[in-house]
Length: 286
Length: 294
View 1 (cartoon, each protein chain N blue to C red):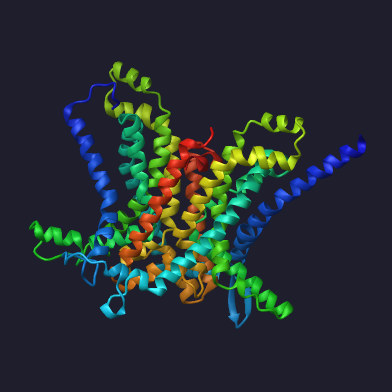
View 2: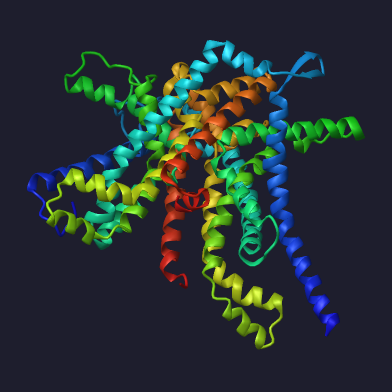
């Protein structure tokens, strides 16, 4: 059970076996994705035909369009980045404002508001997507009927994708930043004010630097969640497909190992992001 | 003096208003109004182009058409099963991380368990497809080892969907479980052991009651995410997946029948909310505490 209690040898062996099997289960799917990005065959399937970099650099002449020559895929990566940057920016700014609102202000209805701020996390993403789609279309129709204007940004497309993802990612940013603001020692602010600092200077030089680790952390999480979002995006997407939607479409058709190449690229990007965050972690002030 | 006091209170009000504005805008424009609109949509019926009347037709057709409610029930049951399997699989590893492994080993194991979830669900599903499809890795291995004469198709079964869903959900179970197990004092287990408790009874009377908040939090989140999943069932289940989110997509995007799709969406939301509520009631926890655990 626990290290201080006697454990029979078979239990130790079983534990080690379990951990091994569990890790195999976790990493086998990722490993095959990575390995078959380099297989010299038109399908990501065994047997192994030898090593190639065609799925990264191949061009039309070779009969294989590699990742870095596939303008459709590269375009969708770019689209995902733009969407994720917008969602991250909006979520961090609004999340920080929400944190100050919930931790510093007193107003009637605060309990209800704090409950409401958590609800987006328990609404399935597909439903967030369709409700925003339907509401935005109604507003767009209203615009047309009343003013004769075409409100294109309210039709399926990237602006709606950004809003849809923002609608629940901001709840996560709010939780993360509030948790840190709650632990802030307000006497530090009082000290700065007593020493003659203005409210704005206190916010900029004392409170925000303290919040920085939470802000950076929630920005990274927001970017990642936006980049990987599928459910909400699927309902709101227009003609420009972000990467997850593009990959889904190709996976249904039975795609070439170029998808493995993109996946490997994504795994490397995630790994770098994770390492950067882990390295930052210990240096953050308590 | 009085002037500066009103000045200060005016300033406080301005700050409050500025902080309230984005929060209210977010919740009203993206959560509350869209869901009210969806409710209105689900309670109407098209009688002529651009002409609608209030009706229960959308909900009647859900109960009248066996395919619809069969898929709904199937989605709910498979989600419950996936949640239970995820708990069974995650509990031992959470125990090992929280209690058996020490220091750096424990931290390392925890991080290693989280790594796959930094990668998009699309990528993880692609991995399972390469592993399981007829021309894939596992069927080839089975033939090689002599278990089957021909490669067998391992995709497009309910079991495949379950494997995919459990895999995708593990993180959301492991994190709250580790959190709640770490706070359990080892001396309680030692005491129970000294008093003659066996593994099973210690687990039942000490460990599980202590870890209940973590178990509830994990189960609620996993159930909700599984119920609302679209990618994993459609790709791993193919045409046989019959997942309810797929029905919503079909009504909304393919058939452009928004009224029916809205009703389906509400039914799914009702089920999801009911399960969250039941989970909270059963374990006597508050919603806000559970959400902070995950």
